[in-house]
Image (tube, rainbow, N blue to C red; front, side):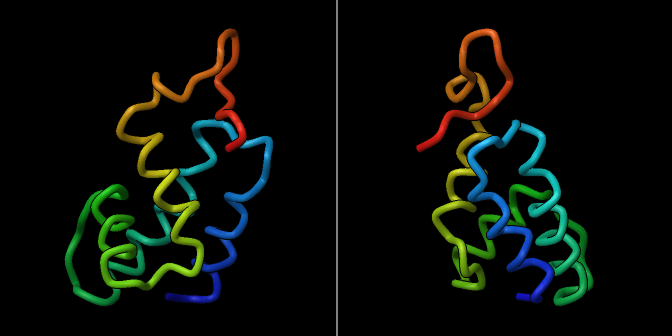
Length: 86
């Protein structure tokens, strides 16, 4: 994984995350996937593949980001679109 990808995933540790803050790091993983394979894929698939292949230095944060992407309503706090701290 690139240094840029590592930095982006590490940034997901912030406590003031919104649902939309996960898109950037996942987009970097999608670009990394495209560069490595020559293929095009979704952000969610690229994130799962990075975990599967142990390419992610912030695997717990990435797992949480994928969990939020798959079930955003389960992580929404009342009256706010901010993801709660965990």
